Length: 367
Ligand code: DOR
Ligand code: ZN
Image 1 (cartoon, helix red, strand yellow):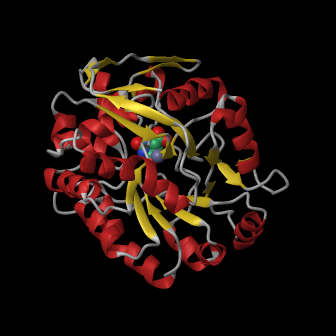
Image 2 (spheres, helix red, strand yellow):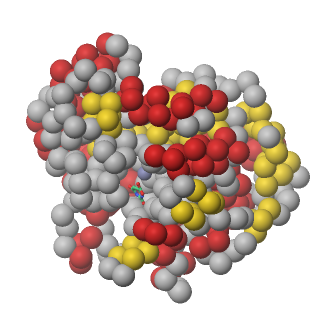
């Protein structure tokens, strides 16, 4: 069995910085990506639109150039969202959007994940004109939807967790105050978040990662598979089912691929006092998504099922971000492929299947 697909946009990926970027970009290209949305939680963060702006961070201009120079000139489009910090102003949004340098902004919960220490609390932007300026200028808000600063018992539980708290307590107010703001609910993991997206207007969409389609908490805690540790955490069966239902719904226009491939080398992934959040899936994400679709019971040899898969991987996200569909194609083949660690300038990075004890995956790719 094989499926020919247009090259696709990975609308949430971490390409990091420095010499290792080259390896991460190569892995994106090797899995048929025509373009990327590259996350701004770099060191330093991408917190300015242009180099003429004040502040310590990198600019979107400068980081986009770094990506292009590290092999990303092969991409048809590179979107770098602006990291929302306490220094972000509505004026930056307005002028950035006018110059067409600014397409999206990223909200991180302060200290809530890797590289989120520069973020300010959500209410800051509700009140200080930043979200208002984004709505006005048509700049997309990429949201890491988790409540920050929760104690352990409220952070992760079966009845409530940081993502559910965010989608119940923050998102309704955001949608009400800024009804035209375009929002991507990133890497959603819960039924509550999926329901919120489904019940919202066309201005609200969501990305879903391979790991959240494939796994639940039990898969992580059995043997403590730390390569599956990412944020938001994988959740429970009813949540995975809600994500699977959302992506396999034949009329799906709101849910699309954003791998959140987040490389951490062996030096930093697991340490004596904790573990960096992030699953590395670059190079193999379409294969893992296909595996996830099949695990829902969908028969990918069927033309209608292939169409549904194509919407999720190739069509919906490009349409939401106003990107052109790619002319070039790649082919997914139902043929086992072995998975190898990636050697980078920062050290060895372990792809998720290897971290789960699997040295092969059921699908492979032909470019
Ligand atoms: O698991 C994650 N890893 N979640 C994030 O939000 C950030 C990412 C990273 O940068 O490693
Ligand atoms: Zn991410």
